[in-house]
Image 1 (spheres, one colour):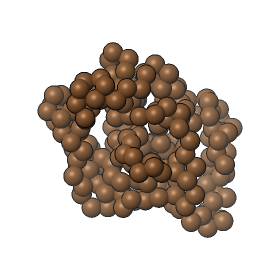
Image 2: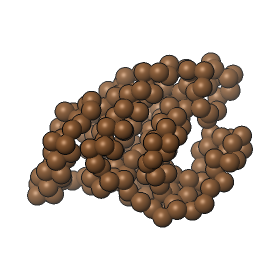
Image 3: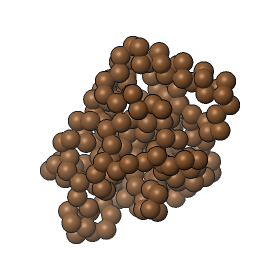
Length: 210
């Protein structure tokens, strides 16, 4: 339903988001626009290793949880960086790349797996001025059961997902993924369960394999 949002959105499309939220509310949509975080969860081993190698990126102060205001300017920046990283980085597994099963790092040589795409998008968006509390690394499961990582952007119009498998930016409920856990908005080192939230009708299509 929101596939028209591919590409750079203008003011009319942001207005359409607002109108669509009203329609969903009136229709009594079965799924909320935003995910509900639950109890603390174990951080992924890849995040622990990333922090051990780059403590300056993880030893950060607590911040208030703050959703991102979805303005035209913000939407353009999300689309631009999502597409740029997806086109620039070529998919390669950690085993092929580094000879280990799991390693989270920046894809500085142009190759990486899903977590590396997420880390780069997160860094670039923070450099563009978006708050860290609105850029959350998230663990999901695909319809096949395989693990995958995406970047969740909590906004005032719902939780949107930046994914290396597609250029479209979709609401979480449109991705077809099962949502397992993600970073806390106030502390990136705290991970919270998402209760294995699952859309009623999977709609995911792969762009590139992790």
